[in-house]
Image (cartoon, rainbow, N blue to C red):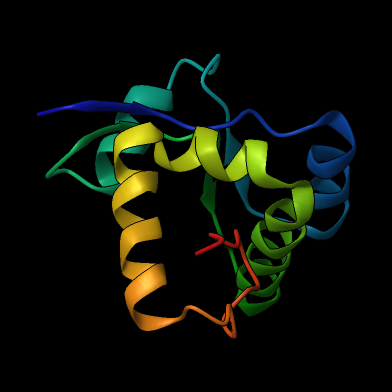
Length: 111
């Protein structure tokens, strides 16, 4: 298994999520973080910046909005999210299949 670290959310993003999210938000400092992240995806040893446990449909919507807002943070967040090797593979695919960058939202990868 390989470890993967995610980009830490800014305080402003996390505060916004907390205002609209009724479920649990588990951060890496929490005592139950390791258990929560294993449930997130037991096949890979990933270390997400947050693990969210929605309690209702509104929580799911809030979590998706959070990710969409985070995706507007810029290319440095995209690089940190994917890592250099994976980002270069994605760029290669982007050059082949979307050279005009039509699909440019949510962590855009420039061709």
